[in-house]
Image (cartoon, rainbow, N blue to C red; front, side):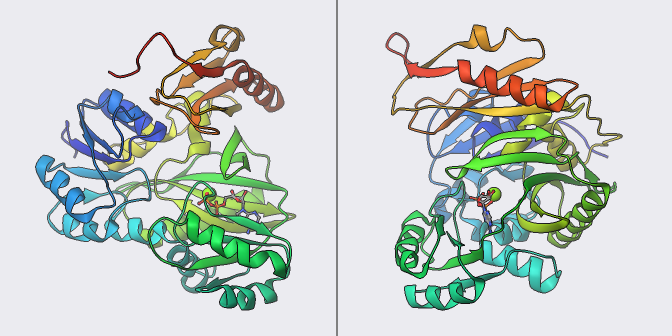
Amino acid sequence: MTDLPKTLMLLGSGELGKEVTIAAKRLGCKVIACDRYANAPAMQIADIAEVFDMNNEKDLKERIYKHHPDILIPEIEALAVNILKDIENEGITVIPTAEATKITMNRDKIRNLATKELGLKTAKFGYAASPLELRNAAEPLGFPVIVKPLMSSSGKGQTLVNNQKELEEAWYSAIEGARGSIPKVIVEEFIKFDLEITLLTVKQKNGKTLFCDPIGHKQSKGDYQCSWQPASISKAQLQEAQKMAKLITDKLGGVGIFGVEFFISGDQIIFSELSPRPHDTGLVTIITQNLNEFELHLRAVLNLPIPTIIRNSPGASRVILSEDYLDSVKYMGINEALSEPNTEILIFGKPNSKPNRRMGVALAKDNDINNAIAKADKAASYVKVIKNDTLSTTY
Ligand SMILES: Nc1ncnc2c1ncn2[C@@H]1O[C@H](COP(=O)(O)OP(=O)(O)O)[C@@H](O)[C@H]1O
Ligand SMILES: [Mg+2]
């Protein structure tokens, strides 16, 4: 039984947190939205905003005790995760769990769990704590390889390396792009995949694990550019991906939605990584599903029933990026973008922009998946982020 409302504290208030907040407010919950900057997207909807450094253990603890939420929902990885166990011991639910949040924050922890404990197939990999170790770890993988900091997201500090000579520079990029102070990298065999997918996996307290239809996506410059649902994979591949996603999410435990990433190469399904929260490529579910990934997350988090997940139509998403550094923004081309039927534009409401910052997304649905993709692409292409001279975005 769930009595509502609950008080939820959201650690990270970007566009995904904003949608989680919308879902929470629809269920009458109270939301405290936290981030390192003011007027972050989720803060524009939440009941209370808290601006502080969530990597600072003392600050994070202080804010949690100040509000004493029922449930703590991490929406980003850059957190002082070491305090979460104490928080959990004091009776505050951490989503999915304090331990799972910690494991998924580090590429080595989740990779070791996937391969050594569960035997999941991944790209061949090694770890290195110095340029020399990196040479030794990369050699047996065969070039090209990808070098990544152990702690990073959105492709930060990642380099595709074609030969031994390029390795040293990749080491320094990784150390520079790393979040936190661990001077260690993972080096991976480069998989020439046909397709990469996200399998949204909903882990419930009292119900079985549910899956959304697989989402195909394309990444460039470290971020997702477009996604579509359903991704075309065989039934056997889907079953294999679901089996792997169930294994790893069961091992991590807790409740909520997980974005489980796979590479599809020929008939092989290769586990890549996983987010214990809604996934950016899953924004497409806002237009395709009866319950989008944020609503599913909330239902699982609040232990509410999910009788069925229905995908009403094929659909696609295309990100809207800014090109410049702007301290106040406005958007042009929305009329053109919305002139096609079954097309939506989400503007995240970020107070300022920088090159390649994700400011919004175009969503489209159509009975034909290729039309949906083309429609989302076209809609996004109309929208331009420009300097706003007339209006301050300060609320
Ligand atoms: N071993 C690999 N082989 C081929 N492409 C890769 C590999 N690892 C990462 N990539 C590409 O880089 C993207 C980002 O890598 P990922 O490990 O998911 O990091 P992040 O945590 O920044 O999302 C992936 O979605 C994929 O497109
Ligand atoms: Mg990823």
